[in-house]
Image (cartoon, rainbow, N blue to C red; front, top):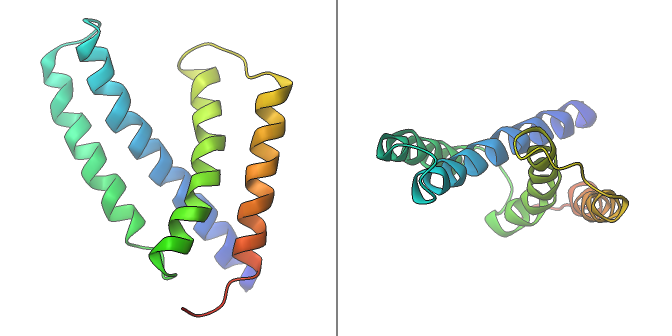
Length: 113
């Protein structure tokens, strides 16, 4: 049962990271002249979803943010590859592994706040 909760939490973190990345990417497109100001509306919605998704985790907020940070790093590098067209290097992959290992230590060793 704990592994299902861990996978569910990880999936929720990935969705949260995509919402944050999209909410920041769309204004960047507008700011750099590669998109319309209308992109600011879905960006605002995406950032609202991002905040709401963070509230769905039952742990203390600081622990949630710490674990989320590692998943955000991994998701951002996948974004780098799929959206920006830049293939991550070995050092990017190593950094993601270290961050996720740290998040795993936090997740597996968590105690009630």
